[in-house]
Length: 296
Ligand code: GLN
Image (cartoon, rainbow, N blue to C red):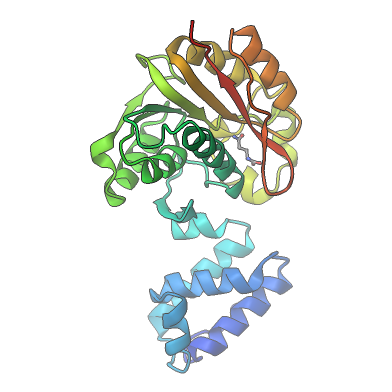
């Protein structure tokens, strides 16, 4: 099934078509898009470059790189891992082995935060944000890209993730408003924070083996495995966050498809109120649960 394609000497356009057909034959779900992204990365060409150079010939060095990327993709390594980057909230983020590939679903957390802050006219204030288990820094950096006067701290237990998040902050010109610290969830943070966000691990341990191979074999399990019932991280993070939030502070947590009710209960048990319904993602799944610390 994975016979090598002789890419050398093909035109860029012929290589793109051959690669897409090959990915399709090997059961890859979005062959056209993946072929364009992988070929673009191998040739260092963007979408426009691929079109304007459609007729030029692939060199043998380029063919070697394309063949390597092809082999990696048909063994179900995600395109984002092969490229080492992924777009999130319109930001180009670098990834490493210690970071999850940011998902579009997670943009729901960013949207929920911005909706609330804007509706309360707090979007231009000097608010302080914490992102617990920041990974690539995706949520924190997306928020800071929208909130000009805000600053934030990202935590992660993996130094590799923190180095990646820090690099992303620099590349995006947001380093002056961010800091990153290594700790277990929020253990080393000092409040108060106006907004705390997190996309913690929430997959039930027993469900990990059944995940798509793109996820199971390439995302760090530490960022996926939520323990026996998938809720272990929430039982740690929510009480920590309740103690760190400023009066009127908001906690927004990403959850799995069936977890908004139990996570809401853990928030109530920690003394938070739930003034907003969970926010749904594009698939209609309750993805972001929102709690608030009431002012006394
Ligand atoms: N949304 C991820 C997935 O479906 C899981 C991320 C997480 O556990 N936080 O693979």
